[in-house]
Image: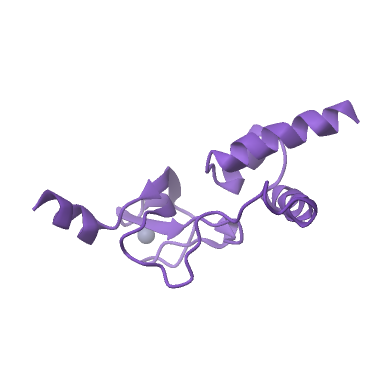
Length: 122
Ligand SMILES: [Zn+2]
């Protein structure tokens, strides 16, 4: 029982840090699916403690998005996918090769759309 409480605290801390489920799962020796389920159940009990990650239905460009970047070593393409907890990263494929065989994990975090960056620099 004590372990469960510790794990939940750790899960909560990692969740709030914006870490992708895949990374949280690695940290906690678990699987993204199990982590997602745990978050789902915790959220049912305590919705305010487990806010949905940044998720704007209209995705206004001014706001940073949680993204997870990948690099395909086959065609040297870098791309990023939105990193919400309901995104299944195991289904991510290279947009060019349509394959996940050469994908390498890149960074994750809040990315500000390029158009906004450019406008800010101008
Ligand atoms: Zn590729």
